[in-house]
Image (cartoon, rainbow, N blue to C red; front, side, top):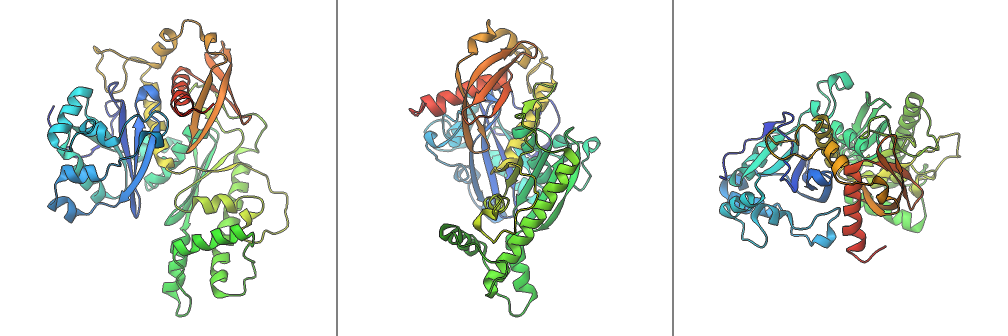
Length: 456
């Protein structure tokens, strides 16, 4: 297996999917300031993101002047496996170059021959220069580099318009993967966006406005007297106010607090207005827990959970609490409908998982993605029929599952013969149903995260 040229190719299904030998693969999202990386488990373990990290945007001068293999190695973290999640058993660097080997093209070739597959990489980016540099970074090792497109996440028939930003589509896909439809995502980064879908997975649309840092910068640049509030100072100020339990008054009495309370109240009020309008479109929350619909892979967001992501996600999550998180003075409570707001970092990578699992499911068991028909196959149908003789033997076992970065533990309580699914009740009172692939993954997560670390 050679380290041949690896220019990023546009995804084409099913051949762009990971092969059955891929025990792990990579996804990369290009932001405005950072590259966001994820190391995923293989398709047999649900293709879940198991490790996240970020690096600065690529610099062409560094790539052109340096050793590409060394540069690739520098972008891969050395993190103890105990710090990773959901079945990450070794370093991403070890995956590419082999355990404890010095990074080199030859080491990568030998590791790929041992795995019997090239390293798969999926990129979400509207920045063509970064995609080209990332492709060059992987040229020195056996790899398959794919540039994902909008149609991978949502088609035009599902409401995607041609100029719709790829990161928004991927984040909405991530919300669907974690909670199902309907979905609403607030992404608080350089730009602050919100994107919504209805119960059928049709995109309703969304909005775009300046994020916190851009708001502060524009006030400084566009006026003679207003100071520039740096984002890190803004976050430190909010943390101090929260610790002191002294929310900033809406009628601030100094310039800095006036700028901050203006930004916070505008973002909070706009988000609350969006949530109210979204609930008018999709209906109010019900007491029924999120559950699969008629399709085993499709969840229904009955609780109308709202996800926040991006660099300012923690602030947005607090602002959407009933008391605005103690950051600013709340007005008297009205008849606002309560919804569950959850911060989920790296949501785009869960969106990539959602796409890969959807395309794997659509293959109908004829072959696993990337495998030819005459090779051994693992399909969802075969797993369900062959893996367990007595489905009810799983009743009573403990399982665990990650929702974003939070681990939830529960127990299988019954087998649903009508749907072929296993019902799980989580320790926090939530419930959902697993198919065979999800059950296997949840068993593995429990072994790694709970038994393996001496927890219960």
